[in-house]
Amino acid sequence: MRVQFFEHFDDEPEEDLPPADDPALDGLDLQASPDLNLDAVPEPPAALPDSAEGQAPKALDEGLAAVGVPPAFDPADRPELLAGLYDRLAHAKSQNDAAPITAAIEELWTTSGSDTVDLLMSRATQFANDSEVDLSLAVLDAIVDLAPNEAEAWYLRAKVNVLAGNPERALADLRHTLNLDAKHYLAITDLGLVLEQLGAKKEALEAYRQALAVNPYLDDAKAGVDALEREVEGQDI
Image 1 (spheres, rainbow, N blue to C red):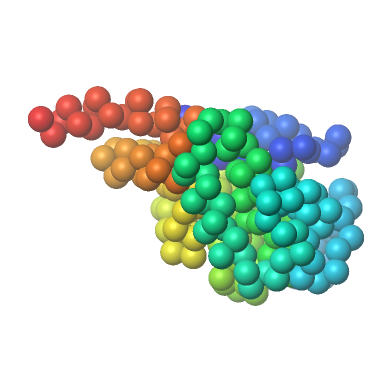
Image 2 (image 1 turned 90 degrees about the vertical axis):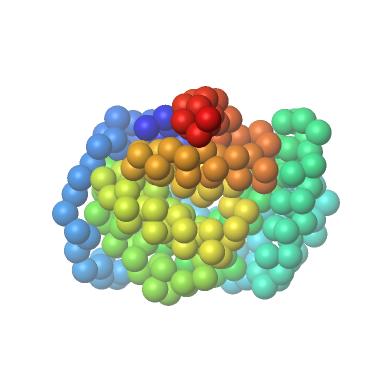
């Protein structure tokens, strides 16, 4: 597979965490996740920022302010805010112009408005980065039951399913993500990666192109198009 599925996680990892490209995260094929007792799940070593339920943390305030979006938003307004940001991203004139827009989008993706969901998402990411893939999946199963409309939970579970050697389950989770947020460009790109892994190269190429239509500055999607364009379209001649 062309890229590591965890390259977008924990862009600023804590000192004690393994790097995102740790080879221990590759090729895992674990048994089904055990039943999860949330009370028994240990706290991750990094403390989460203090925030009141439904309020954006300081980092999100700054990221949204940088692109002119009011930081004190109601989580119910998130789809409308994302729609505006996606439109701006598609028309960004350069990668430098796109950078603050993608930063704000990705902050919004991970800000559910629920401290409980955000905490569990942080734990699931921590466990995956610690190679505790079965425990990460168990936490994510709990999250999608608790917040089934949270696109980022389905996206994270898709990525962990890839690490666990379950590409078919990852594909289902990615499609669920895109049913909730059709312009989640990282999910579209990873959809292309999974389809390519499963041998559906024509569909993978279409996914990469769809991702670039949302975010023209995705290196992984560009690489996917470059790798598949001649092979796939040559077959159709």
